[in-house]
Image (cartoon, rainbow, N blue to C red):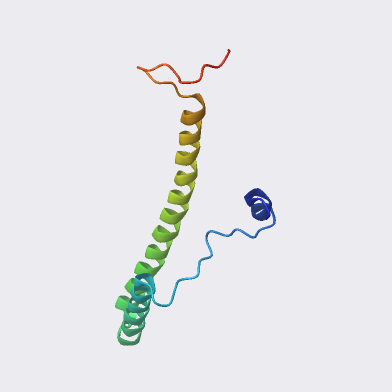
Length: 101
Protein backbone atom coordinates (compact mmCIF):
# COMPACT_ATOMS: atom_id res chain seq x y z
CA UNK A 1 0.00 0.00 0.00
CA UNK A 2 1.42 3.36 -1.02
CA UNK A 3 1.44 6.22 1.42
CA UNK A 4 -1.11 8.96 1.02
CA UNK A 5 1.75 11.45 0.61
CA UNK A 6 3.13 9.42 -2.29
CA UNK A 7 -0.30 9.16 -3.90
CA UNK A 8 -0.77 12.91 -3.52
CA UNK A 9 2.67 13.58 -5.05
CA UNK A 10 1.85 11.33 -8.02
CA UNK A 11 -1.39 13.21 -8.63
CA UNK A 12 -3.60 10.27 -7.75
CA UNK A 13 -5.56 12.23 -5.17
CA UNK A 14 -7.77 14.85 -6.76
CA UNK A 15 -10.42 16.04 -4.30
CA UNK A 16 -11.91 18.46 -6.82
CA UNK A 17 -12.79 15.57 -9.16
CA UNK A 18 -15.64 13.54 -7.76
CA UNK A 19 -17.96 10.89 -9.08
CA UNK A 20 -21.55 11.26 -7.96
CA UNK A 21 -23.41 8.02 -7.32
CA UNK A 22 -26.32 7.63 -9.75
CA UNK A 23 -28.81 6.79 -7.02
CA UNK A 24 -27.79 9.54 -4.59
CA UNK A 25 -29.84 12.52 -3.50
CA UNK A 26 -27.05 14.72 -4.84
CA UNK A 27 -27.44 13.21 -8.32
CA UNK A 28 -31.18 13.89 -8.21
CA UNK A 29 -30.54 17.51 -7.24
CA UNK A 30 -27.92 17.95 -9.97
CA UNK A 31 -30.33 16.58 -12.59
CA UNK A 32 -33.12 18.84 -11.34
CA UNK A 33 -30.82 21.88 -11.61
CA UNK A 34 -29.68 20.89 -15.11
CA UNK A 35 -33.26 20.33 -16.27
CA UNK A 36 -34.39 23.68 -14.85
CA UNK A 37 -31.45 25.48 -16.43
CA UNK A 38 -32.13 23.87 -19.82
CA UNK A 39 -35.80 24.84 -19.59
CA UNK A 40 -34.94 28.44 -18.76
CA UNK A 41 -32.32 28.69 -21.53
CA UNK A 42 -34.88 27.43 -24.06
CA UNK A 43 -37.60 29.82 -22.90
CA UNK A 44 -35.71 32.99 -22.06
CA UNK A 45 -34.15 35.47 -24.41
CA UNK A 46 -32.47 38.83 -24.38
CA UNK A 47 -31.96 40.47 -21.02
CA UNK A 48 -33.54 37.59 -19.06
CA UNK A 49 -31.23 35.01 -20.67
CA UNK A 50 -28.23 37.25 -19.93
CA UNK A 51 -29.36 37.50 -16.30
CA UNK A 52 -29.65 33.70 -16.11
CA UNK A 53 -26.11 33.33 -17.47
CA UNK A 54 -24.80 35.80 -14.88
CA UNK A 55 -26.64 33.88 -12.16
CA UNK A 56 -25.21 30.53 -13.29
CA UNK A 57 -21.68 31.97 -13.52
CA UNK A 58 -21.95 33.57 -10.07
CA UNK A 59 -23.33 30.34 -8.58
CA UNK A 60 -20.42 28.36 -10.06
CA UNK A 61 -17.90 30.84 -8.67
CA UNK A 62 -19.43 30.83 -5.19
CA UNK A 63 -19.76 27.03 -5.11
CA UNK A 64 -16.19 26.47 -6.26
CA UNK A 65 -14.73 29.07 -3.91
CA UNK A 66 -16.75 27.78 -0.95
CA UNK A 67 -15.72 24.17 -1.60
CA UNK A 68 -12.05 25.15 -1.88
CA UNK A 69 -12.14 27.27 1.27
CA UNK A 70 -13.90 24.55 3.28
CA UNK A 71 -11.41 21.96 2.06
CA UNK A 72 -8.46 24.13 3.13
CA UNK A 73 -10.15 25.00 6.43
CA UNK A 74 -10.62 21.29 7.12
CA UNK A 75 -6.87 20.76 6.83
CA UNK A 76 -6.17 23.75 9.07
CA UNK A 77 -8.64 22.53 11.67
CA UNK A 78 -7.16 19.03 11.56
CA UNK A 79 -3.66 20.44 12.01
CA UNK A 80 -4.84 22.50 14.99
CA UNK A 81 -6.28 19.33 16.54
CA UNK A 82 -2.95 17.55 16.03
CA UNK A 83 -0.99 20.43 17.55
CA UNK A 84 -3.29 20.52 20.56
CA UNK A 85 -3.00 16.75 20.95
CA UNK A 86 0.79 16.89 20.78
CA UNK A 87 1.50 20.07 22.74
CA UNK A 88 -1.65 20.98 24.65
CA UNK A 89 -1.82 20.70 28.39
CA UNK A 90 -4.74 20.38 30.75
CA UNK A 91 -5.46 23.36 32.94
CA UNK A 92 -6.58 21.13 35.80
CA UNK A 93 -5.00 17.67 35.54
CA UNK A 94 -1.44 16.44 35.46
CA UNK A 95 -0.55 14.26 32.46
CA UNK A 96 -0.81 10.49 32.99
CA UNK A 97 2.64 10.01 31.47
CA UNK A 98 5.33 12.42 32.57
CA UNK A 99 7.89 13.45 29.97
CA UNK A 100 11.24 14.90 30.82
CA UNK A 101 11.83 18.39 29.57
